[in-house]
Length: 112
Length: 114
Image 1 (tube, rainbow over the protein chains, first blue to last red):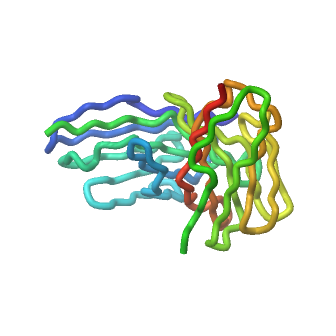
Image 2 (image 1 turned 30 degrees about the vertical axis):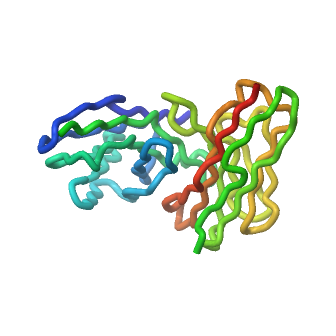
């Protein structure tokens, strides 16, 4: 059974600092997603990582995937207040057609 | 394009009542999903539909039924609501390229069962 974990669950950081959110999963997969959710809102796609070694960047966010370690990272560079949100990783289970399992989320608060 | 739409946005039920949550997408996606979101637990998959005419159980299907009415619409039914079903429900859709592509989410339905 696929399990997806995120680390840390809560993160408070100052503007201008760098930090990394980690996403570990328990079974083989080569497809991983990152989503952002603002309070009281729906989820918005950030990245889809489709192969080992994949790296994608958008603004101050960069995501990478290591399928051998079953690990993805979301790196935040020079954080700004607008990045405050909850970030979810999700993994394609591959145990049955089209099933996607989400991690518990990382609640990020960027303090001016 | 409206993307993924859900109705209603808010609902309060009494224990034992039934209701259907509606979801529609206009992106011509094959796959559709229903999730529930509870504090501190991320999103948990209730049911999904890989394509029109097929449905399958996710992690937490008990107490729910679904119907994939056509390619656009995927409904979720609570036959006899329980307080444990108080949650925020999200519908999502995706295309499929050798696996599920990124999911597009609806705005959510906030359900309270008293």
